[in-house]
Length: 319
Image: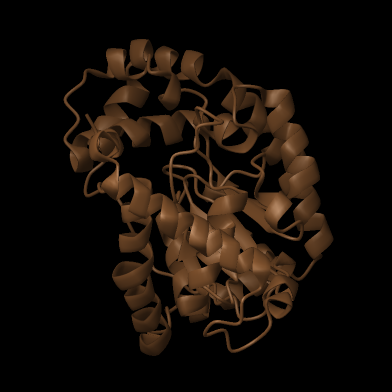
């Protein structure tokens, strides 16, 4: 029995969580001026970018860039409460409305549950999505390695790879299902930019140029990098496990080929001939800014207010 089930037994904690949730939404909808230093319409007019964080696609590094660039104006998106209308929980309309009560001038969000096919656009039709993709075989092998090394997973790879949630992950994160045609359609219609991990620096330079917001500081240092890659290399070099990786990522392989051969070259062409010299300059000056003020204020808002309130309202105390 999880927290949500246990609190429903006596109704008290569940009632409090629902009251907080409904109060936040009601106050937003009625435009109450309580402690609001500027009109809500001003908030709505501010452009917001949304990073689709797919596991093992340099997502932590990109998120750190957003945190450092926007500080307390960036949110690591979380689900506010269980949504009974869907089995799959994506960060959606009501989650954004609640989040904007805490992050008044929200400029960017990032997270595994940010998905361009959700109803997020109903809350803000001007959200600008972007994502990074990675070679599916490499990504999947790294995903298993991460779960073993960092999360203590003991499941043999042959069993782990049969779990639907670990197969064709990139397609699922874009389309909400294992449907490569839908994923490509979402990329074409809703995603403003897609980078490649294999060309990470080039992708960041192009992202900075494509991003509709000012202030994106793309300087970085890699985060969440594996201490060793023995597990990944073993999976890739073994013909049997490599075949399992290929079979489990057929849709992702098609999606990746489309991005690598069509979308990414087009983005390069749109950037122009200055890409190579601009990347060279970026690499020569790539040293992340400390940005103590923005990082501290963002961390305080995230850990002291946002996450505790989300945990209480959702009943998901584990994240």
